[in-house]
Length: 90
Image 1 (tube, rainbow, N blue to C red):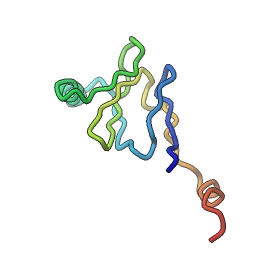
Image 2: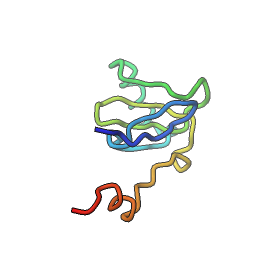
Image 3: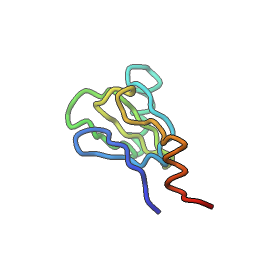
Image 4: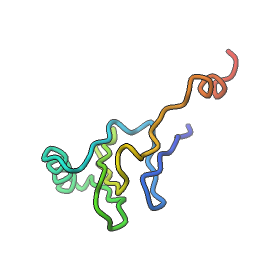
């Protein structure tokens, strides 16, 4: 099984297939989500010491912090042509 990886900054990556949502860090619910993950020891800080701009929620209940704005993360899906090429002729 191969994972398509998404760079979240400073040499850190997450598996695209395990990513559920990306939210901004400036709302109260996002801050509560971060605090809850910290208490459960499920918080991954990939900010490199910089300000948290994005909160990535993973299907494993882990929360990943990134210093990259959500709209700057390379999250676009493969085009249908690339998907067909990767699956080959059936």
